[in-house]
Length: 148
Image (cartoon, rainbow, N blue to C red; front, side, top):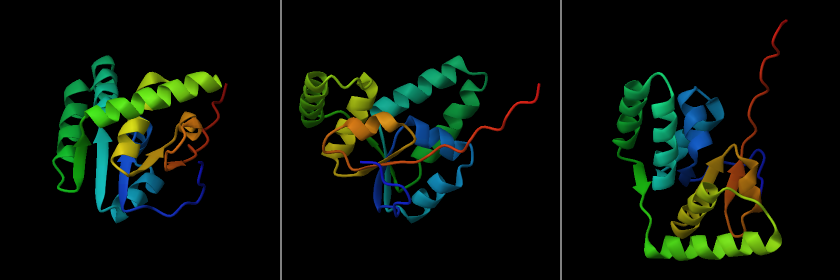
């Protein structure tokens, strides 16, 4: 469910888009992190971030920044458990039956958030389609227009 203007929650999960926007200085994500008791990143998010780091030009700098973030006492990594895998399978099947296309990694991230009973913070509207997910989809600021 999309929650515009939602109040920050005490226990949140960041997807890749929310972490990336936080690193870019997004104030709204920073506000959520400032009031959170715990912040979690699913293992799948770490994989997506690593792929971006390797494809980018600042691989080591980005890894160090992520490691520093993960070392914060309020930050946790969510591993994949048997329960998470079962939840993933159920979500995948439900979305397939409805004909709702959602990326595989997004389904894994949603399964991790649901199983950890946390609120997902994202900029990705695909998460709105996932049943049982407590989610806030933030809106990305408009890109500045390019002059020609």
